[in-house]
Length: 396
Image (cartoon, rainbow, N blue to C red; front, side, top):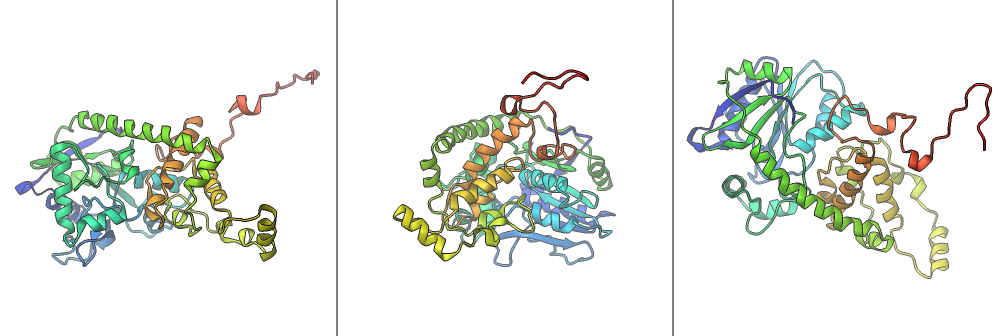
C-alpha cells in the first residue's frame, strides 16, 4: 500500500457514516484551491447514481445532499470523465472521489496522454464492491439510501457483501485492489469503526496540504488487518475464476460458445475506461464486408453465423487492452446479453501483465510495457542472437 504522510480523524456523529462523509467532502469543496468536486450523486429520482460535478461557488445548502459515494452502485468507470476534465489545463482544480479501479484506470490514461494529474486532487475510498447495474436497480427499488445503509451494515458487521441473496458484481468479488493506493487522500473504512470515526490518510503532498487545511484532528492510521483478511478472500475467488476461465481459453470451441451471444453492439468497448482510440478499426469499412463475401462464406461452409467477426473483435480488444486492463468489470456491466466479458479479459490481462512485470495503474512512473524496448526480453520466445565482435562472424 502507499505510504501515509499524514492521518486525520473524521468523527461520525450519531453513527451516520454517509452524513460524515458528505460533511468531509463539503469541507474539502470549500477549501482554498478546490474549485469543484466530482463525486457519485443520486439523481432526482433518489435511486440511480451517476457522477456529478459540483462547483465551489454554489453555496446552496442542499448542494451536497445527493452526494453518495458509499452507494453500492457502479454505473460507469469515472476515469473517462476525469480524463475529459483534465485533458487540457483550465486553471481550476477538481477534487475527484473515485473507486480504486477508477484511479488505476485514470493512471493508465495519464500515461497514454489522455489526462493530467496537475489540476486534480484524488480522494479514494476503501471499496468493498458494488452491484451490477441491473441488480442495483432491482435491489434499490424506490429507496436508494436504504440500500446503502443495509449494504454497509451487513459488510461492517458480518463481512458479507450480498443483499437478499444477490452478490456484488463478479469483478468486485475477484478484486485484489480494494484500497485506493493511487489517491492523494485515502478514506480508510477498512479497520476503522465507522459508527464512531473514520480516517483520512494523506498519501501525497497535495493530499497532506488539503487535510491540514481542513483542521481535522491528527490520528494514528488504522491497522491493515482488515485489508489483509479481505484480500485473502478476494484473491481466493480470483484464482478460482482464473482456473475456470483457463478451461475456456484453452478450447476454441468453448471460447466461441462463451461469446456466442455477442451482437457486435460494442458496448464493452465504449464502457472500457482505457479503450481510448479515437477511431476503432471495427467501426471502419474494414469490417463492413461486401454482400458477396457473406454469400461466399455461406456457400463454402454451408451456413455462417451472423453477425460475423464477434470472437475476432474480442480477441483484437484483448490484444490491445490486456496490458492496460484494471479489471473493473464495466465491460460485463454494459453487455446487453450478460456475456461474462470481464472473466476473459481479467484472466488474460493478469497473465500478460505478469509476463511484463507490470501492473496497470500501479504507478504513474511505470511506462506502458509496449512502449519500452528491452533487448533481452522474452528470449524463450524470440531467441537472442549473439552480437558479433568486430572482425568476427557469427556461425549460422
